[in-house]
Length: 318
Image (cartoon, rainbow, N blue to C red; front, side, top):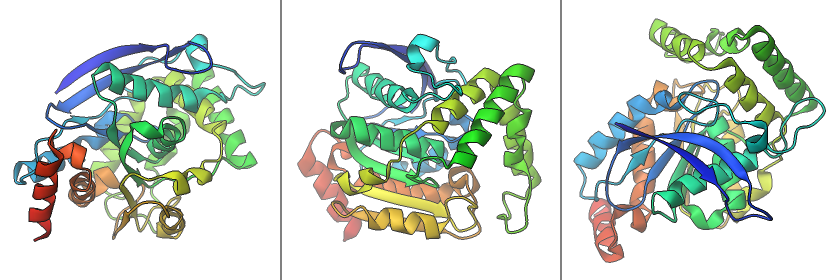
């Protein structure tokens, strides 16, 4: 796996401005356009590792061209540095960042463009889903396919906003990620994987390895994100909606209406039994199959020759 750290500058906008830095992990080189895996909070791109391996195994056995697979670290996560004030944009009185989501969306697309691509298939889980919807909102021309996993389009409620700001403040003041360790707490109704020692140990480790200031920055960004529900009807690229049945925040009851609002595209919904919020880690093979099926519906992902891509897709459906 190769890691490229890219400083993105001057995306087309009202005026040129500095954007956050993204460390991009190239899991596999390939032909066609990339599948970009955007991770959730409060971890980093490593949460995609099991799913990425399953994706490669699927595509190795398939007739489609081997497409690139990327797993960037969101700004402030993993190997990506915490954005500076200049990279973050405006700051509200409570510390929330109303330009944060736009800056991240622009940085991801700049990363794509700097690598010589104009489009990608974007897959975002939880907070990664906010980012992918932000890309759809600002750069719909860069979206060749879209997968939304365990996420939602709503802005934060006043209570959720206040909670994020309080967590961000504590992370910074105490220089700790302890305020988000509740992500590994076990509750009645959780999936069997979420309750397992393997899950608890792995996610505890990943959370403790995060930068406290980076956790805080992501909370401040998410607290001020806009309502994105209007974006679903604007999606025209092939789409996938994926969620765990035991996800406490984005269960099928939340995700089905989201999929139903995608009236201008073809969307395939996958509901996963005995699976919680981090579906790509809990049930990597199932998520990989859903993502690979999405890739098969995006001709540009199967190679430069659309006719060859169509033939490969037809062969799969025969």
